[in-house]
Image (cartoon, rainbow, N blue to C red):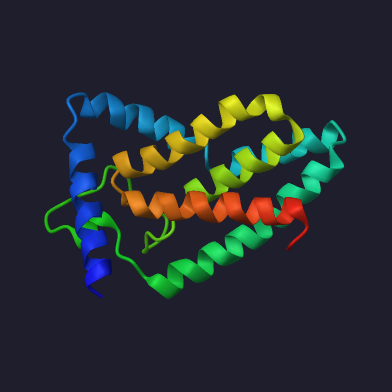
Length: 171
């Protein structure tokens, strides 16, 4: 239990450090835009474009990946029931209203890393764009005040590892 408390304390310190940066308002503005790119409609459009281009293996990977990722995400959220920063830090208010109650793991980050791994496996040249984007999605969720850093690390691990297991045929 002490380990979890130490991790939480480090999370709160890191979270607070991020929110005290000099250009916070610009970071919030940028974070809103980056976070928006990790919303569901963009993934549907990407899937449709891969369908039109007849990249069927990638379409299947993404479809199965999202079904499994969303299922695990939902299970973990409700299993861990970790409070979001506004509930965990007295007096703190997030920049945006989150879509659900719990923060662990970050679904936006998990989905972004799933897409980054999947699309990079089909188009390796895209990795240099997709992985920095996925990292920025995680950072944006912290800057918007709806996740602690470890929420986004867990999301990145969930999305990446699930996709890698699918690609390797272990799932």
